[in-house]
Image (tube, rainbow, N blue to C red; front, side, top):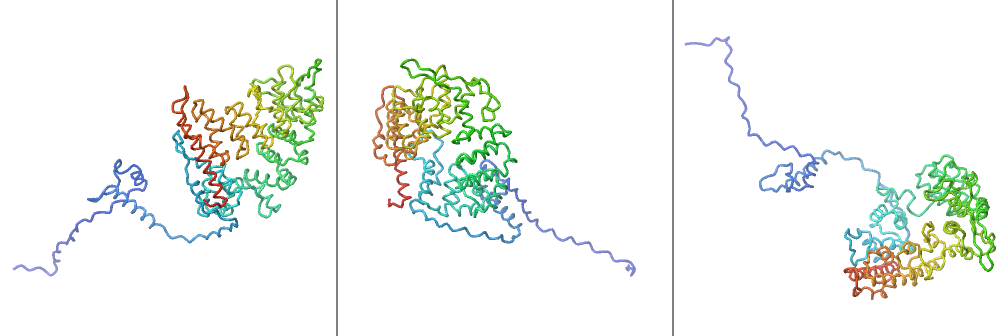
Length: 563
Protein backbone atom coordinates (compact mmCIF):
# COMPACT_ATOMS: atom_id res chain seq x y z
CA UNK A 1 0.00 0.00 0.00
CA UNK A 2 1.52 3.16 -1.03
CA UNK A 3 1.35 6.18 1.15
CA UNK A 4 1.98 9.78 0.38
CA UNK A 5 4.72 11.45 2.28
CA UNK A 6 3.66 14.25 4.44
CA UNK A 7 6.27 16.40 2.83
CA UNK A 8 5.03 15.90 -0.68
CA UNK A 9 2.79 18.74 -1.77
CA UNK A 10 -0.60 17.75 -2.91
CA UNK A 11 -1.35 17.82 -6.57
CA UNK A 12 -3.21 21.05 -7.30
CA UNK A 13 -6.72 20.71 -8.54
CA UNK A 14 -7.22 21.79 -12.11
CA UNK A 15 -8.11 25.51 -12.42
CA UNK A 16 -11.73 26.19 -13.03
CA UNK A 17 -12.43 28.46 -15.99
CA UNK A 18 -15.59 30.45 -15.46
CA UNK A 19 -18.13 29.67 -18.09
CA UNK A 20 -18.17 32.16 -20.94
CA UNK A 21 -21.52 33.88 -20.98
CA UNK A 22 -23.30 34.27 -24.27
CA UNK A 23 -21.75 37.38 -25.87
CA UNK A 24 -24.13 40.39 -25.71
CA UNK A 25 -24.27 42.43 -28.90
CA UNK A 26 -21.92 45.38 -28.62
CA UNK A 27 -23.56 48.79 -28.87
CA UNK A 28 -22.98 50.08 -32.38
CA UNK A 29 -20.76 53.08 -32.64
CA UNK A 30 -22.93 56.10 -33.44
CA UNK A 31 -22.62 57.42 -36.95
CA UNK A 32 -21.11 60.89 -37.26
CA UNK A 33 -23.68 63.66 -37.39
CA UNK A 34 -22.59 64.90 -40.85
CA UNK A 35 -23.18 61.40 -42.25
CA UNK A 36 -26.69 61.38 -40.83
CA UNK A 37 -27.38 64.80 -42.34
CA UNK A 38 -26.12 63.77 -45.77
CA UNK A 39 -28.29 60.64 -45.74
CA UNK A 40 -31.32 62.71 -44.73
CA UNK A 41 -30.72 65.28 -47.47
CA UNK A 42 -30.23 62.69 -50.20
CA UNK A 43 -33.04 60.44 -48.98
CA UNK A 44 -32.88 56.84 -47.87
CA UNK A 45 -33.95 55.74 -51.33
CA UNK A 46 -30.74 57.12 -52.83
CA UNK A 47 -28.31 56.62 -49.96
CA UNK A 48 -28.23 53.73 -47.49
CA UNK A 49 -28.29 55.27 -44.01
CA UNK A 50 -25.16 54.54 -41.94
CA UNK A 51 -27.21 52.95 -39.13
CA UNK A 52 -28.44 49.51 -38.17
CA UNK A 53 -31.96 48.73 -39.31
CA UNK A 54 -34.02 46.42 -37.08
CA UNK A 55 -36.21 43.76 -38.63
CA UNK A 56 -39.45 45.29 -39.74
CA UNK A 57 -38.11 48.82 -39.44
CA UNK A 58 -37.87 51.14 -42.42
CA UNK A 59 -34.53 52.80 -43.24
CA UNK A 60 -36.11 56.22 -42.77
CA UNK A 61 -37.33 55.36 -39.26
CA UNK A 62 -33.90 53.96 -38.38
CA UNK A 63 -32.27 57.17 -39.59
CA UNK A 64 -34.59 59.29 -37.47
CA UNK A 65 -33.95 57.09 -34.41
CA UNK A 66 -30.20 57.46 -34.93
CA UNK A 67 -30.54 61.23 -35.25
CA UNK A 68 -32.53 61.33 -32.00
CA UNK A 69 -29.89 59.24 -30.18
CA UNK A 70 -27.07 61.39 -31.54
CA UNK A 71 -28.85 64.56 -30.46
CA UNK A 72 -29.40 63.16 -26.96
CA UNK A 73 -25.73 62.09 -26.69
CA UNK A 74 -24.58 65.62 -27.55
CA UNK A 75 -26.96 67.26 -25.13
CA UNK A 76 -26.01 64.90 -22.33
CA UNK A 77 -22.40 66.04 -22.58
CA UNK A 78 -23.31 69.66 -21.81
CA UNK A 79 -23.18 71.12 -18.36
CA UNK A 80 -25.81 73.64 -17.34
CA UNK A 81 -24.38 77.13 -17.58
CA UNK A 82 -25.23 80.01 -15.28
CA UNK A 83 -28.20 81.97 -16.50
CA UNK A 84 -27.27 85.06 -18.47
CA UNK A 85 -28.25 88.51 -17.41
CA UNK A 86 -31.81 89.26 -18.34
CA UNK A 87 -32.04 92.07 -20.92
CA UNK A 88 -33.63 95.31 -19.91
CA UNK A 89 -37.31 95.59 -20.80
CA UNK A 90 -38.16 97.15 -24.12
CA UNK A 91 -38.85 100.87 -23.94
CA UNK A 92 -42.39 102.14 -24.21
CA UNK A 93 -43.68 103.39 -27.55
CA UNK A 94 -46.48 105.91 -26.95
CA UNK A 95 -47.59 106.05 -30.58
CA UNK A 96 -51.07 104.67 -31.36
CA UNK A 97 -51.48 101.08 -32.47
CA UNK A 98 -52.49 100.20 -35.99
CA UNK A 99 -56.17 99.64 -36.68
CA UNK A 100 -56.91 95.88 -36.84
CA UNK A 101 -57.50 95.85 -40.61
CA UNK A 102 -54.26 97.74 -41.25
CA UNK A 103 -52.39 95.33 -38.99
CA UNK A 104 -53.66 92.36 -40.98
CA UNK A 105 -52.71 94.12 -44.21
CA UNK A 106 -49.15 94.71 -42.97
CA UNK A 107 -48.81 91.04 -42.03
CA UNK A 108 -49.82 90.03 -45.55
CA UNK A 109 -47.43 92.49 -47.17
CA UNK A 110 -44.50 91.34 -45.01
CA UNK A 111 -45.24 87.68 -45.70
CA UNK A 112 -45.45 88.08 -49.47
CA UNK A 113 -42.35 86.88 -51.32
CA UNK A 114 -43.09 88.76 -54.52
CA UNK A 115 -44.05 87.49 -57.96
CA UNK A 116 -42.67 84.25 -59.25
CA UNK A 117 -39.99 83.89 -61.85
CA UNK A 118 -42.46 83.28 -64.66
CA UNK A 119 -42.70 85.95 -67.34
CA UNK A 120 -46.44 86.61 -67.07
CA UNK A 121 -47.58 88.32 -63.90
CA UNK A 122 -51.26 87.59 -64.40
CA UNK A 123 -53.89 89.88 -62.89
CA UNK A 124 -52.83 89.82 -59.22
CA UNK A 125 -51.30 92.99 -57.74
CA UNK A 126 -47.61 92.89 -56.82
CA UNK A 127 -47.66 93.20 -53.04
CA UNK A 128 -43.91 93.83 -52.82
CA UNK A 129 -44.43 97.07 -54.74
CA UNK A 130 -47.28 98.08 -52.42
CA UNK A 131 -45.25 97.72 -49.22
CA UNK A 132 -43.29 100.98 -49.74
CA UNK A 133 -46.55 102.88 -50.23
CA UNK A 134 -48.09 101.27 -47.17
CA UNK A 135 -45.08 102.22 -45.02
CA UNK A 136 -45.12 105.81 -46.29
CA UNK A 137 -48.83 106.16 -45.59
CA UNK A 138 -48.50 104.63 -42.12
CA UNK A 139 -45.72 107.12 -41.37
CA UNK A 140 -48.05 110.05 -42.02
CA UNK A 141 -50.50 108.67 -39.43
CA UNK A 142 -47.80 108.21 -36.77
CA UNK A 143 -48.60 104.56 -35.96
CA UNK A 144 -46.29 102.11 -34.21
CA UNK A 145 -45.58 98.64 -35.54
CA UNK A 146 -47.25 95.63 -33.85
CA UNK A 147 -44.73 93.92 -31.58
CA UNK A 148 -45.32 90.50 -33.16
CA UNK A 149 -44.42 91.88 -36.61
CA UNK A 150 -41.16 93.58 -35.58
CA UNK A 151 -38.92 90.62 -36.60
CA UNK A 152 -40.47 90.46 -40.08
CA UNK A 153 -40.24 94.24 -40.41
CA UNK A 154 -36.54 94.21 -39.50
CA UNK A 155 -35.91 91.37 -41.95
CA UNK A 156 -37.51 93.40 -44.73
CA UNK A 157 -35.44 96.46 -43.78
CA UNK A 158 -32.31 94.33 -43.90
CA UNK A 159 -33.14 92.94 -47.35
CA UNK A 160 -34.32 96.19 -48.97
CA UNK A 161 -32.28 99.28 -48.23
CA UNK A 162 -34.87 101.44 -50.00
CA UNK A 163 -37.37 100.56 -47.25
CA UNK A 164 -35.06 101.05 -44.26
CA UNK A 165 -35.96 104.64 -43.33
CA UNK A 166 -39.72 104.03 -43.36
CA UNK A 167 -39.47 100.53 -41.84
CA UNK A 168 -37.23 101.64 -38.95
CA UNK A 169 -39.41 104.67 -38.33
CA UNK A 170 -42.43 102.38 -37.97
CA UNK A 171 -40.46 99.93 -35.79
CA UNK A 172 -39.53 102.77 -33.44
CA UNK A 173 -37.63 102.32 -30.15
CA UNK A 174 -38.80 98.75 -29.66
CA UNK A 175 -37.39 97.81 -33.04
CA UNK A 176 -33.99 99.19 -32.01
CA UNK A 177 -34.24 97.32 -28.70
CA UNK A 178 -34.87 94.08 -30.57
CA UNK A 179 -32.06 94.79 -33.06
CA UNK A 180 -29.54 94.81 -30.19
CA UNK A 181 -30.35 91.15 -29.53
CA UNK A 182 -29.71 89.86 -33.08
CA UNK A 183 -26.53 90.41 -35.06
CA UNK A 184 -28.49 90.20 -38.33
CA UNK A 185 -30.23 93.46 -37.40
CA UNK A 186 -27.21 95.44 -36.24
CA UNK A 187 -27.60 97.73 -39.26
CA UNK A 188 -30.53 99.37 -37.46
CA UNK A 189 -28.19 100.59 -34.70
CA UNK A 190 -25.86 102.52 -36.99
CA UNK A 191 -28.11 105.52 -37.37
CA UNK A 192 -27.72 105.48 -41.16
CA UNK A 193 -30.99 104.01 -42.34
CA UNK A 194 -33.61 105.49 -40.05
CA UNK A 195 -34.62 109.07 -39.36
CA UNK A 196 -31.61 111.28 -38.77
CA UNK A 197 -31.17 111.97 -35.08
CA UNK A 198 -28.51 113.43 -32.85
CA UNK A 199 -27.12 111.57 -29.83
CA UNK A 200 -29.28 111.61 -26.72
CA UNK A 201 -29.39 115.05 -25.18
CA UNK A 202 -27.46 116.54 -28.16
CA UNK A 203 -24.60 117.18 -25.75
CA UNK A 204 -21.51 118.50 -27.57
CA UNK A 205 -19.39 115.79 -25.98
CA UNK A 206 -21.68 113.03 -27.26
CA UNK A 207 -21.74 114.55 -30.75
CA UNK A 208 -17.97 114.89 -30.82
CA UNK A 209 -17.48 111.33 -29.56
CA UNK A 210 -19.73 109.85 -32.24
CA UNK A 211 -18.02 111.98 -34.88
CA UNK A 212 -14.55 110.78 -33.87
CA UNK A 213 -15.38 107.12 -33.14
CA UNK A 214 -18.29 106.24 -35.40
CA UNK A 215 -18.30 104.33 -38.66
CA UNK A 216 -18.17 106.39 -41.83
CA UNK A 217 -21.89 105.99 -42.57
CA UNK A 218 -22.69 107.01 -39.00
CA UNK A 219 -20.55 110.11 -39.35
CA UNK A 220 -22.27 111.10 -42.61
CA UNK A 221 -25.67 110.77 -40.92
CA UNK A 222 -24.43 112.75 -37.91
CA UNK A 223 -23.01 115.57 -40.02
CA UNK A 224 -26.25 115.81 -41.98
CA UNK A 225 -28.32 115.94 -38.78
CA UNK A 226 -26.10 118.60 -37.17
CA UNK A 227 -26.16 120.70 -40.34
CA UNK A 228 -29.95 120.62 -40.44
CA UNK A 229 -30.10 121.89 -36.87
CA UNK A 230 -27.21 124.36 -37.05
CA UNK A 231 -25.23 124.72 -40.33
CA UNK A 232 -22.36 126.55 -38.65
CA UNK A 233 -22.01 123.90 -35.93
CA UNK A 234 -21.88 121.20 -38.59
CA UNK A 235 -19.15 123.06 -40.47
CA UNK A 236 -17.10 123.46 -37.29
CA UNK A 237 -17.50 119.74 -36.56
CA UNK A 238 -16.21 118.86 -40.03
CA UNK A 239 -13.27 121.23 -39.66
CA UNK A 240 -12.01 119.44 -36.52
CA UNK A 241 -10.94 116.35 -38.49
CA UNK A 242 -10.76 117.67 -42.07
CA UNK A 243 -6.98 117.52 -42.35
CA UNK A 244 -6.84 113.82 -41.38
CA UNK A 245 -9.73 112.53 -43.51
CA UNK A 246 -9.22 110.41 -46.62
CA UNK A 247 -9.79 112.11 -49.97
CA UNK A 248 -12.89 110.07 -50.83
CA UNK A 249 -14.33 110.80 -47.38
CA UNK A 250 -13.64 114.52 -47.72
CA UNK A 251 -15.55 114.58 -50.99
CA UNK A 252 -18.61 112.86 -49.48
CA UNK A 253 -18.53 115.08 -46.41
CA UNK A 254 -18.58 118.11 -48.71
CA UNK A 255 -21.67 116.69 -50.39
CA UNK A 256 -23.41 116.83 -47.01
CA UNK A 257 -23.03 120.62 -47.03
CA UNK A 258 -25.04 121.06 -50.23
CA UNK A 259 -28.47 120.57 -48.63
CA UNK A 260 -27.97 123.44 -46.17
CA UNK A 261 -25.45 125.59 -48.03
CA UNK A 262 -25.01 129.09 -46.57
CA UNK A 263 -22.77 132.08 -47.21
CA UNK A 264 -20.74 131.24 -44.08
CA UNK A 265 -19.54 128.06 -45.84
CA UNK A 266 -17.71 130.02 -48.53
CA UNK A 267 -14.33 130.50 -46.75
CA UNK A 268 -14.13 126.78 -45.97
CA UNK A 269 -15.03 125.84 -49.56
CA UNK A 270 -12.52 128.34 -50.96
CA UNK A 271 -9.80 126.60 -48.96
CA UNK A 272 -11.02 123.25 -50.34
CA UNK A 273 -10.31 124.56 -53.85
CA UNK A 274 -6.62 124.06 -53.02
CA UNK A 275 -7.13 120.47 -51.82
CA UNK A 276 -4.65 117.90 -53.07
CA UNK A 277 -7.51 115.75 -54.43
CA UNK A 278 -9.02 116.70 -57.79
CA UNK A 279 -12.43 115.25 -56.85
CA UNK A 280 -12.52 117.31 -53.66
CA UNK A 281 -11.65 120.45 -55.61
CA UNK A 282 -14.38 119.71 -58.14
CA UNK A 283 -16.98 119.15 -55.43
CA UNK A 284 -16.04 122.39 -53.67
CA UNK A 285 -16.21 124.30 -56.97
CA UNK A 286 -19.67 122.87 -57.73
CA UNK A 287 -20.95 123.96 -54.33
CA UNK A 288 -19.49 127.44 -54.70
CA UNK A 289 -21.04 127.84 -58.14
CA UNK A 290 -24.45 127.07 -56.57
CA UNK A 291 -23.91 129.61 -53.77
CA UNK A 292 -25.43 132.99 -54.68
CA UNK A 293 -22.92 135.82 -54.65
CA UNK A 294 -19.83 133.64 -54.30
CA UNK A 295 -16.44 134.89 -55.41
CA UNK A 296 -15.98 131.80 -57.56
CA UNK A 297 -19.20 132.58 -59.41
CA UNK A 298 -17.91 136.09 -60.13
CA UNK A 299 -14.62 134.73 -61.44
CA UNK A 300 -16.39 132.21 -63.67
CA UNK A 301 -18.75 134.90 -64.96
CA UNK A 302 -15.83 137.13 -65.95
CA UNK A 303 -14.34 134.27 -67.97
CA UNK A 304 -17.50 132.98 -69.66
CA UNK A 305 -19.01 136.37 -70.49
CA UNK A 306 -15.81 137.19 -72.34
CA UNK A 307 -16.37 134.09 -74.50
CA UNK A 308 -20.02 134.76 -75.44
CA UNK A 309 -21.19 138.01 -76.98
CA UNK A 310 -24.11 139.29 -78.98
CA UNK A 311 -23.06 139.92 -82.56
CA UNK A 312 -24.35 142.98 -84.38
CA UNK A 313 -27.76 142.08 -85.81
CA UNK A 314 -28.59 142.56 -89.43
CA UNK A 315 -31.33 145.13 -90.09
CA UNK A 316 -34.61 143.65 -88.90
CA UNK A 317 -32.91 140.54 -87.48
CA UNK A 318 -32.68 139.40 -83.83
CA UNK A 319 -28.92 139.08 -83.81
CA UNK A 320 -26.97 136.00 -82.90
CA UNK A 321 -24.64 134.77 -80.20
CA UNK A 322 -21.00 134.58 -81.17
CA UNK A 323 -19.01 132.07 -79.12
CA UNK A 324 -15.22 132.12 -78.79
CA UNK A 325 -14.11 129.45 -76.29
CA UNK A 326 -11.01 130.03 -74.12
CA UNK A 327 -7.72 129.20 -75.78
CA UNK A 328 -5.94 127.97 -72.66
CA UNK A 329 -6.90 126.44 -69.31
CA UNK A 330 -4.70 128.40 -66.93
CA UNK A 331 -3.88 127.64 -63.31
CA UNK A 332 -6.65 129.90 -62.03
CA UNK A 333 -9.28 128.03 -64.01
CA UNK A 334 -7.98 124.71 -62.80
CA UNK A 335 -8.04 125.88 -59.18
CA UNK A 336 -11.68 126.90 -59.66
CA UNK A 337 -12.61 123.36 -60.70
CA UNK A 338 -12.13 123.39 -64.47
CA UNK A 339 -10.82 120.03 -65.64
CA UNK A 340 -8.15 120.53 -68.26
CA UNK A 341 -8.25 117.19 -70.07
CA UNK A 342 -11.49 116.58 -72.00
CA UNK A 343 -13.14 113.17 -72.36
CA UNK A 344 -12.63 111.22 -75.54
CA UNK A 345 -14.32 112.82 -78.52
CA UNK A 346 -14.56 116.32 -77.05
CA UNK A 347 -12.45 119.26 -78.10
CA UNK A 348 -10.46 121.02 -75.41
CA UNK A 349 -11.82 124.51 -75.99
CA UNK A 350 -15.49 123.49 -76.06
CA UNK A 351 -14.92 121.34 -72.96
CA UNK A 352 -13.48 124.31 -71.06
CA UNK A 353 -16.27 126.60 -72.25
CA UNK A 354 -18.98 124.23 -71.03
CA UNK A 355 -17.48 124.12 -67.55
CA UNK A 356 -17.19 127.91 -67.37
CA UNK A 357 -20.78 128.53 -68.48
CA UNK A 358 -22.16 125.84 -66.14
CA UNK A 359 -20.49 127.56 -63.17
CA UNK A 360 -21.55 131.10 -64.11
CA UNK A 361 -24.48 132.64 -62.17
CA UNK A 362 -27.41 132.69 -64.57
CA UNK A 363 -28.54 136.12 -63.41
CA UNK A 364 -25.46 137.60 -65.10
CA UNK A 365 -26.57 136.72 -68.64
CA UNK A 366 -29.59 139.05 -69.10
CA UNK A 367 -27.53 142.16 -68.36
CA UNK A 368 -24.72 140.95 -70.60
CA UNK A 369 -27.08 140.25 -73.52
CA UNK A 370 -29.07 143.46 -73.72
CA UNK A 371 -31.60 142.88 -70.94
CA UNK A 372 -33.20 139.89 -72.62
CA UNK A 373 -35.18 137.34 -70.62
CA UNK A 374 -33.99 133.73 -70.33
CA UNK A 375 -36.55 132.65 -72.94
CA UNK A 376 -35.35 135.32 -75.36
CA UNK A 377 -31.71 134.39 -74.79
CA UNK A 378 -32.39 130.70 -75.41
CA UNK A 379 -34.23 131.58 -78.63
CA UNK A 380 -31.24 133.46 -80.06
CA UNK A 381 -29.38 131.67 -82.85
CA UNK A 382 -25.81 130.67 -82.09
CA UNK A 383 -23.13 131.16 -84.70
CA UNK A 384 -21.14 128.16 -85.81
CA UNK A 385 -21.87 124.79 -84.25
CA UNK A 386 -21.77 125.89 -80.60
CA UNK A 387 -25.51 125.93 -79.87
CA UNK A 388 -25.76 122.45 -78.35
CA UNK A 389 -22.78 122.79 -76.03
CA UNK A 390 -23.87 126.27 -74.92
CA UNK A 391 -27.44 125.17 -74.16
CA UNK A 392 -26.21 122.02 -72.40
CA UNK A 393 -24.05 124.16 -70.12
CA UNK A 394 -26.98 126.45 -69.35
CA UNK A 395 -29.04 123.35 -68.49
CA UNK A 396 -26.42 122.20 -65.98
CA UNK A 397 -26.32 125.69 -64.48
CA UNK A 398 -30.12 125.80 -64.17
CA UNK A 399 -30.16 122.48 -62.31
CA UNK A 400 -27.25 123.43 -60.06
CA UNK A 401 -28.70 126.86 -59.22
CA UNK A 402 -32.35 125.67 -59.12
CA UNK A 403 -33.40 128.45 -61.48
CA UNK A 404 -36.98 127.74 -62.62
CA UNK A 405 -37.08 130.58 -65.20
CA UNK A 406 -34.06 129.21 -67.06
CA UNK A 407 -35.27 125.61 -66.73
CA UNK A 408 -38.62 126.65 -68.21
CA UNK A 409 -36.93 128.43 -71.10
CA UNK A 410 -34.60 125.52 -71.86
CA UNK A 411 -37.38 122.94 -71.73
CA UNK A 412 -39.60 124.91 -74.09
CA UNK A 413 -43.18 124.02 -74.94
CA UNK A 414 -43.66 120.23 -75.08
CA UNK A 415 -47.11 120.51 -76.63
CA UNK A 416 -45.87 122.11 -79.84
CA UNK A 417 -46.19 119.41 -82.54
CA UNK A 418 -43.44 121.09 -84.55
CA UNK A 419 -40.98 120.67 -81.67
CA UNK A 420 -39.71 117.13 -81.89
CA UNK A 421 -38.18 115.33 -78.93
CA UNK A 422 -34.86 115.41 -80.75
CA UNK A 423 -34.99 119.20 -80.60
CA UNK A 424 -35.29 119.06 -76.81
CA UNK A 425 -32.18 116.88 -76.58
CA UNK A 426 -30.38 116.89 -79.94
CA UNK A 427 -27.84 114.29 -80.94
CA UNK A 428 -24.58 114.75 -79.07
CA UNK A 429 -26.28 116.61 -76.24
CA UNK A 430 -25.51 115.85 -72.60
CA UNK A 431 -28.52 117.68 -71.18
CA UNK A 432 -30.86 115.80 -68.87
CA UNK A 433 -34.48 116.86 -69.31
CA UNK A 434 -35.49 114.94 -66.18
CA UNK A 435 -33.13 116.99 -64.00
CA UNK A 436 -34.45 120.18 -65.58
CA UNK A 437 -37.98 119.12 -64.72
CA UNK A 438 -37.08 118.76 -61.03
CA UNK A 439 -36.41 122.50 -60.94
CA UNK A 440 -40.02 123.34 -61.86
CA UNK A 441 -42.83 123.45 -59.29
CA UNK A 442 -44.65 120.14 -58.92
CA UNK A 443 -47.91 121.10 -60.64
CA UNK A 444 -46.10 122.72 -63.56
CA UNK A 445 -43.85 119.69 -63.88
CA UNK A 446 -46.86 117.36 -64.13
CA UNK A 447 -48.51 119.57 -66.78
CA UNK A 448 -45.33 119.65 -68.86
CA UNK A 449 -44.92 115.86 -68.79
CA UNK A 450 -48.62 115.33 -69.61
CA UNK A 451 -48.32 117.57 -72.68
CA UNK A 452 -45.08 115.85 -73.70
CA UNK A 453 -46.74 112.42 -73.55
CA UNK A 454 -49.78 113.65 -75.48
CA UNK A 455 -47.52 114.78 -78.34
CA UNK A 456 -44.55 112.38 -78.27
CA UNK A 457 -45.96 109.25 -76.58
CA UNK A 458 -44.34 107.15 -73.87
CA UNK A 459 -41.04 106.27 -75.56
CA UNK A 460 -39.00 108.98 -73.78
CA UNK A 461 -41.30 109.64 -70.82
CA UNK A 462 -40.37 106.93 -68.29
CA UNK A 463 -37.75 108.91 -66.36
CA UNK A 464 -39.84 112.07 -66.56
CA UNK A 465 -42.77 110.27 -64.93
CA UNK A 466 -40.48 109.14 -62.13
CA UNK A 467 -39.92 112.72 -60.90
CA UNK A 468 -43.61 113.68 -60.82
CA UNK A 469 -45.42 113.91 -57.49
CA UNK A 470 -47.47 110.92 -56.34
CA UNK A 471 -50.36 110.45 -56.83
CA UNK A 472 -50.23 111.82 -60.33
CA UNK A 473 -52.45 114.74 -61.12
CA UNK A 474 -55.61 113.98 -63.10
CA UNK A 475 -54.29 115.43 -66.41
CA UNK A 476 -51.03 113.48 -66.12
CA UNK A 477 -52.77 110.23 -65.22
CA UNK A 478 -55.20 110.65 -68.10
CA UNK A 479 -52.33 111.30 -70.53
CA UNK A 480 -50.53 108.11 -69.43
CA UNK A 481 -53.64 105.93 -69.67
CA UNK A 482 -54.55 107.37 -73.07
CA UNK A 483 -51.03 106.66 -74.33
CA UNK A 484 -51.24 103.06 -73.07
CA UNK A 485 -54.61 102.66 -74.76
CA UNK A 486 -53.11 103.95 -78.01
CA UNK A 487 -50.25 101.46 -77.68
CA UNK A 488 -52.78 98.65 -77.26
CA UNK A 489 -54.68 99.75 -80.36
CA UNK A 490 -51.39 99.71 -82.26
CA UNK A 491 -51.14 95.96 -81.58
CA UNK A 492 -47.93 95.85 -79.51
CA UNK A 493 -47.42 93.71 -76.42
CA UNK A 494 -47.94 95.34 -72.99
CA UNK A 495 -44.53 94.29 -71.69
CA UNK A 496 -42.99 96.75 -74.11
CA UNK A 497 -44.40 99.35 -71.67
CA UNK A 498 -43.94 97.37 -68.46
CA UNK A 499 -41.96 100.16 -66.81
CA UNK A 500 -44.68 102.75 -67.42
CA UNK A 501 -47.38 100.26 -66.42
CA UNK A 502 -45.55 99.59 -63.16
CA UNK A 503 -45.32 103.32 -62.47
CA UNK A 504 -49.04 103.66 -63.20
CA UNK A 505 -49.83 100.97 -60.63
CA UNK A 506 -47.88 102.91 -58.00
CA UNK A 507 -48.63 106.49 -59.00
CA UNK A 508 -52.12 106.77 -60.50
CA UNK A 509 -54.80 108.19 -58.24
CA UNK A 510 -56.74 105.21 -56.80
CA UNK A 511 -59.97 107.11 -57.53
CA UNK A 512 -59.37 106.40 -61.23
CA UNK A 513 -60.01 102.66 -60.84
CA UNK A 514 -63.71 102.74 -61.77
CA UNK A 515 -63.04 104.89 -64.82
CA UNK A 516 -60.41 102.41 -66.05
CA UNK A 517 -62.68 99.39 -65.67
CA UNK A 518 -63.72 99.64 -69.33
CA UNK A 519 -60.11 99.00 -70.41
CA UNK A 520 -60.05 95.51 -68.89
CA UNK A 521 -62.18 94.02 -71.66
CA UNK A 522 -60.50 91.99 -74.38
CA UNK A 523 -60.63 94.00 -77.60
CA UNK A 524 -60.48 92.87 -81.17
CA UNK A 525 -56.90 92.72 -82.37
CA UNK A 526 -56.13 95.04 -85.28
CA UNK A 527 -54.69 93.69 -88.48
CA UNK A 528 -50.99 93.01 -88.11
CA UNK A 529 -51.15 93.02 -84.31
CA UNK A 530 -48.90 90.76 -82.24
CA UNK A 531 -50.60 87.38 -81.60
CA UNK A 532 -52.56 87.34 -78.36
CA UNK A 533 -51.76 90.97 -77.55
CA UNK A 534 -55.41 91.78 -76.77
CA UNK A 535 -55.56 89.20 -73.99
CA UNK A 536 -52.26 90.28 -72.51
CA UNK A 537 -53.41 93.92 -72.48
CA UNK A 538 -56.63 92.86 -70.75
CA UNK A 539 -54.58 91.15 -68.02
CA UNK A 540 -52.36 94.21 -67.63
CA UNK A 541 -55.31 96.57 -67.23
CA UNK A 542 -57.06 94.16 -64.83
CA UNK A 543 -53.91 94.15 -62.71
CA UNK A 544 -53.77 97.96 -62.86
CA UNK A 545 -57.40 98.33 -61.74
CA UNK A 546 -56.96 95.71 -59.01
CA UNK A 547 -53.84 97.43 -57.70
CA UNK A 548 -55.55 100.81 -57.59
CA UNK A 549 -58.47 99.37 -55.63
CA UNK A 550 -56.11 97.63 -53.24
CA UNK A 551 -54.26 100.92 -52.68
CA UNK A 552 -57.57 102.63 -51.94
CA UNK A 553 -58.41 99.89 -49.43
CA UNK A 554 -55.01 100.28 -47.77
CA UNK A 555 -55.51 104.00 -47.23
CA UNK A 556 -59.00 103.42 -45.85
CA UNK A 557 -57.67 100.80 -43.42
CA UNK A 558 -54.94 103.12 -42.18
CA UNK A 559 -57.51 105.86 -41.66
CA UNK A 560 -59.57 103.47 -39.56
CA UNK A 561 -62.52 103.59 -41.94
CA UNK A 562 -64.91 100.61 -41.81
CA UNK A 563 -64.54 98.22 -44.72
